[in-house]
Length: 528
Image (tube, rainbow, N blue to C red):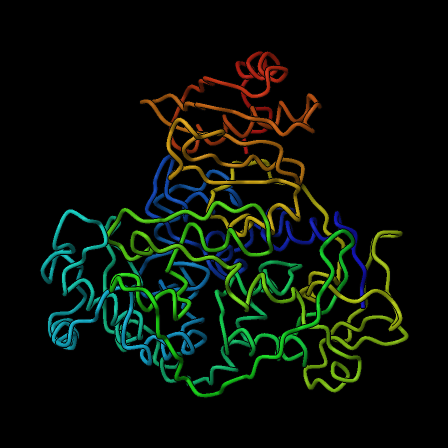
């Protein structure tokens, strides 16, 4: 079992997330998507939409059209489905979400009551080819954003259960097509059990996160009930291929709850909610039940449990639906880690990690560690409180840290409890907070510099001017280099969206105001 300092874990996470070292640029946007495993979609656009901001944060000034083409083009290299939320996913991951499609099909409902004649829409798509919502009768029955027409509900339901797929967009409108036309035949024909899906997805999530607690993995994939139990089994047996580690300063693991692993795809989806718009999603644990909020309560971190919504694109849950992980025994009410016995791990057929007297064996490779920071712990050492990607542990993170504004929906920070644990940065998105009660601003974006989150910016755009309505620094920021980093982040983002000027309207704290305003006219020290 390997012991990591909190700083070791943070650097491993940043490298895994493509924010440390030059290797993160390999493969461009497509390579980035495959390293991250999932890129969250969201309807809000301030400087750009979140999926564009995620690419910008890692790759720099990549053209926005280049980003869009990399996500959505023909033949399909990605598709949209429910992971942590509504996400862009690599097309080769299509079979891995069979477990979720089966669960939706068994539930026979989503947030809305599924119209009995939904198959008519399927026949229409089969006969006429790819369609948008407007092609088959519009999106809404009323002005309420979630009050979808029957045709829109049918399209989304057919997407949920895998009959239809979205592999491209026109503007911001989904284009729905038959899965049998859009998904490569070898992927479409691959049938996996629920357990096989969870095992493979756990490995993907672990690699994307670098170092993660059980709660982090659960949150990445939005697993509940029997599927969460399957994750526990995959971790304990070693089948997920992740290595147990202990991260100093992270919460200690607690004894696991006993949850039976149910192999049947049928899942109970009863809900006490009297509102038909909120039935199904909360009971099923649908990832889209609350895109903005549901990761906030996990890990007992600071919560901004908010009701998301405001579009008809199927990216957020209906109004009034709030998902609290604290009430979910598969999340914050359960352990961060299933602590496996040595014999159980040694008996794993994966061979990926065997704890023993000689330390850690990672797929036959040597463990490379930084002196004094990572040590091999024997059987009698600390109990593990996290899981790590063995490839991440095989080398010391090196290279340059990215300096960038980070999207609120970036996988680096989408789990707010994890963000607090890794960076000591308590973050709340205040979009749905009444304006007089906002502390930092409408769409605050954390500033990443030197591998730390040093502040936040509430951005806007007025013509060719990038406006920072509020720049707030963390209280620990006292160095001139951090002031320069925020300046560089502002100018870099401004240049990317085509702005030629930057204006800062407000700075917190007062001690940082003059240094930032004096540094701003100097322009960026690093054009990247």
